[in-house]
Image (cartoon, rainbow, N blue to C red; front, side):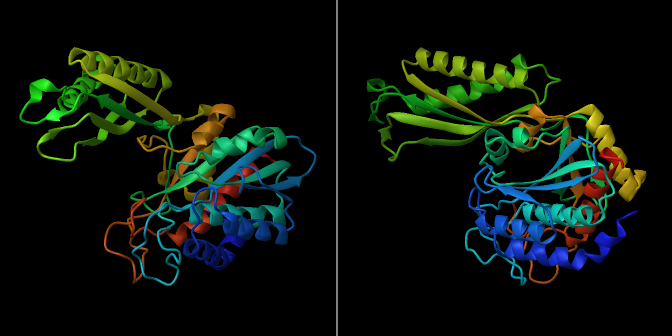
Length: 396
């Protein structure tokens, strides 16, 4: 590896920062302490900051030279509403809140890069350090953009990074084009007519209508969508009734749809609505159809992806960079930024979980798992990538 030497020397402090953040997780739009830590460190290192975008967001500004070129580097800060089962010293001190996705590590890696870039400034232009709130379902990227992120801080490109358990520590993965799916949710209420279960002919059974709708929707995936277009339609909840001898008035279907393109999403949403209404009408039932689009597909821009690959190779070597990483059906609100600006989102390997010392809970070191912990060995690697990317993007 070709890590930045001063960052290696700074690793122990980065680890202290990361573990402090892990011990004090904050949920979306509640990241006040986390933002205070970020702001205090940036200010200590002489980096001007702007606070308040996206409510709790922080933007650091590092300028050098005379060039008008600029790039943005983004890290997310929020935790998840789940109970941590680890018992090591830096485990969450807030019941029901946990850094189970590694945003504590993402924040620490970008702080490591900020420290080095501010001190050495081997670039010509401006680096914007974007510390974003509310990635976990809150759409913090969109909120920062609505508050003027790209207007106040004009940048030529924007980059993001996420740790990825299962990928070897010290490796990177990326792919040009769609890398993460859109995230969407639906809730369909089937309105029937309640009756005694022994006299079904006197009612309209919404449970059976819901079953027929659920089955019909799968033909969208198998017979209407192009087989080459990847998509997922998962019904994750069906709620109906409260007694064994009562046909209820309503049944509810809830679930998620994931796609890599908006066109496929348009097809699925439209046909779900049409099928649900026609099936219900065939049984004399009614429908309330609700479909919510949360995050769009995350699509990496080819030029910036190629550039990010070169920066990765400069840090860890070509043999540790996978430029054809398999896309995931998970979602990420950095997708909003990539709709507005050229850029790229990359994965950095978090390993298999062997880094966890005594006190970790039973279970794998996977994202959104109560036994998860960020691998601190990544801190100088991720920070070095950010530094190389900035220096290569803004050559002096």
